[in-house]
Amino acid sequence: MSLSGKVETWLEYEIRDKEGRIIKKGKIKGKSWKKNFARLLRVVFGESETLRNTGGTGVTILRDHLVDATVLAPEGNDNYGILVGTGGTPPTGDDDSDVYNLANKIAHGDADNKLHHYDTTFVEISFDGSYVYLKYTRDFKNNGSVDINIQEVALVEQITPDTTADYFLLFHTTLGSAVTVPAGATITWRVILKYAP
Image (cartoon, rainbow, N blue to C red; front, side, top):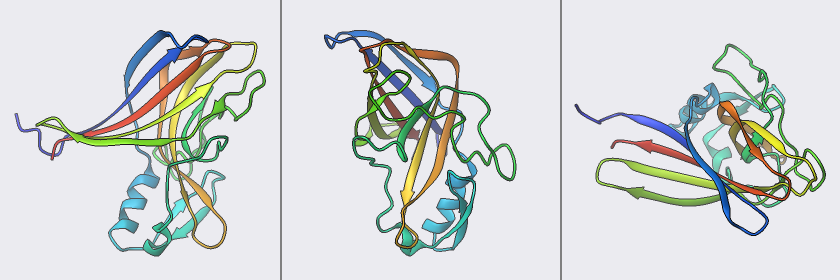
């Protein structure tokens, strides 16, 4: 069977305790690149397109606007990069494929029910002889006193169409069961795009 054209997305996570020991890890098949991702591809290919920002507003994006576009969010920024939430029904625009934000994003912070967001980083582009892999990662630390349950993971891009940055959800997956981050623990999430060239 030919692998040509096969595209998959995988989520990997590792949870470490206060001493840095791995207490749990897992791998989950990602379910959904959203309509904004297809819209963004049209822009990459030289056309203008209206993307829906995380507030639900349509914003016209041109290829020139992508010069500074990035998912590499710095530490402390919970507007873009890899983001996580507690789950629920995410907001949609045109249809179910037009999810534009997490249902219940977990905010950056060091108190209960918040996670300290470290920077989103590019890991690598690699090839194993059959597949090409594109990998991004982000650490989140629970500095509060209560456990936090993660039930959704997203990838949000920052684009600056004028002088003000805006944010566009490209990928969103609701997890089948919650991933629990104990108080004092750190979770690393990796978003991996896998495709056959």
